[in-house]
Image 1 (cartoon, rainbow, N blue to C red):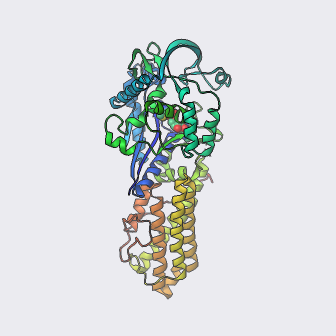
Image 2 (image 1 turned 90 degrees about the vertical axis):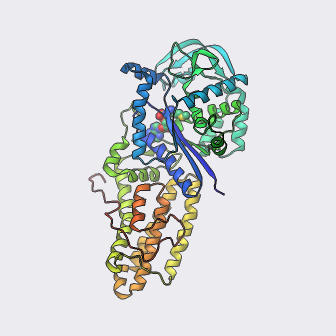
Image 3 (image 1 turned 45 degrees about the vertical axis):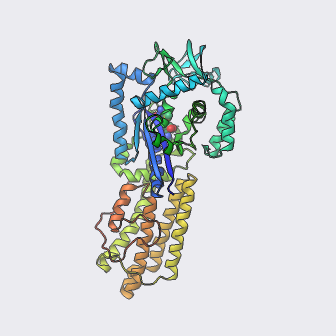
Length: 501
Ligand code: MSP
């Protein structure tokens, strides 16, 4: 029976210009979702925008416009980018939508009625940039800007009440927080007593938020609002069938900087509301420029649009997926992008297609040759392709996407070596039938690699399959039909000639 697979990205702050960090998480979710779909699973892929909070209110007021108008304008930048990056999300949620506000209010009410929200006067240090109270120790780290002392009445969520239950859940569900070093980080954090969470902001200070249902003088804290998007979009209040089918989410994909909110705040909120916890939270590392995190404030943002304009969408997707070891940080440089593109895509992958199609056109009138019998070498290649598929699936289920891709490329390199050994360009003159077998074997091996890589490079692989005149996305040997005519094509990955290499 088909399984279902619900995957989410963080919802992005509308205030930042979308950069490679946002693009990365969304492409990664897209690749995982397309892969699950290819396996025949029923996928639901959600992304969206986090539109409330102080920063949005301030940015809008600086421009002299309403926050909602500001958000509408900003959201277009994200949706345009997702379209260009061929992101296949099933839903796009904005926290200012009615459907979401209803759910946030409902959860606040349920948690309040469970006795898990209380009122208290609080005096402490407040970081405006982080939009939360911080501890003295945090203030001492010097990592927080715009700190001021605040004293005000607020509402608090009894997060501490769920500390033990959370520890228990993490320990009995080893894949709940991934990778394992992030799980250990959270377990370490939970060794200290957990504080309750301030979940309100007085409207006198901030009114761009969702009003608290039991006190009209307050809006809810932006994170309490934002996390709930994951159940809003899967139909928590609107569509019971959808919710029963997709919740709990299989995976919340996040960056390592937002681990605590996802692995501590969110599960305790769900426990209080009596809702099942997501199956897993996976935190990836950062893309660094040199050694610094890419961010607007440090001015080292790589705009994905520029890269796409210069080199195409799929090569950028390929580079991002191949280069980052999930869970660790990765370094983004134009030089490594060009090297990776030229060696894997132009030399190995694209070149194999060119070799095959040139020889088939020249010697078989463009028709995929017949295969009457297979030799020892060809049988070995079929076995290797089966092994590759198995390893590919193992790597994907371990979130080792870079290895899944690398092993596919190794197989492509093997086929190129097989060609060099068999030299079909010479063989055609001596034994056309045998040359045909070599070419069929190469083309079918290439088709299988293409099918495996199609979640990463959906557009270019579609072109490749149309050149091979097949729509078979079957991963097993034999999808290519002898006697069908190859299509015309330009080089799939033309070499980048550049001084940077
Ligand atoms: N709005 C919150 C998330 C709420 S989810 C309920 C938020 N938004 S964000 O726009 O600041 O960042 C979203 C994601 O982008 C984070 O997962 C973050 O790790 C990721 N990235 C931002 N810069 C990044 C890099 N330089 N590299 C990789 N990802 C990084 O946080």
